Image 1 (cartoon, rainbow, N blue to C red):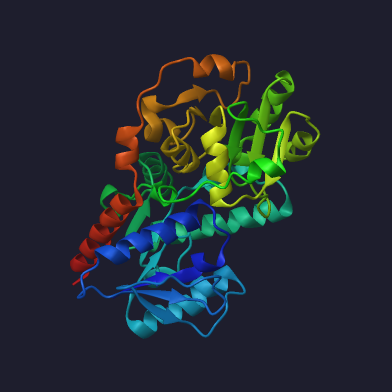
Image 2: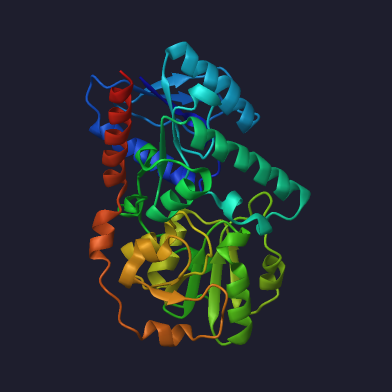
Length: 357
């Protein structure tokens, strides 16, 4: 039996949580009746999925602390059911109860310099603790790119047979209707006359690049959407607020994001560290050109379908970059779907369970 850690049901919907929601939905459609996979749902979950084959097990406990949930409540549930844990959120129960766990990336290990305040350093220590627990104890480690796989293997001395790549997807965007009312709220955003960037407003998303470029090009307009996460907030956020050519619409719905992606000149993603990087994939699905950093996993995922920038250098012209020819994203959009991810995940966890028998 597989018991899915439902901690993602109580988190804000960023990349990891999106991946968990979408892959579980697709996996539910693929299951045979004989396969026993259940989702352990906290009492204070923001929503409960309506699955057909994945069984719902409801906890009487709220998540008040994610570490206490992972290492206490959820760990006890795994013991009670005699189940193997499936963890999506870079955290897991300790020791032999770790089960099958995702490490989407190991940002806290590779970018120590980003964690400066006391709160940041505490976040980093807990992240490193979780990475090491999963690297040492998981039956199977799952990650989202070859880049992340290599980093995990080299940093934590993990053997190749203990780690599998399950990439992200974009297909949640397919049936989504764009909400053009966003342009009523921000009439300065004209059709095909602005650049758009999206992501949690954390340091690795590299708002510094956007800030410096926008200062150099006051005639070009930028819309920068996202929500500042706890800790790791870049100092450039305040500087961006002072620039007349930068619009900060805040946290947007998926439908509003799709509207901006459809009507921007290009989607700009200068992040210097990503385990995968979903937003450029969403933009490509809208028929929008993408301008992304050459760093981390991004060249691996996007290949010749993107225009590339140096994450540390703003001496370039986005307009000139857009004049360069890029390949059709059709192959990438067919490869990176949540349906394909669910198929790979289901095969990986059932194979791991079979080896334990």
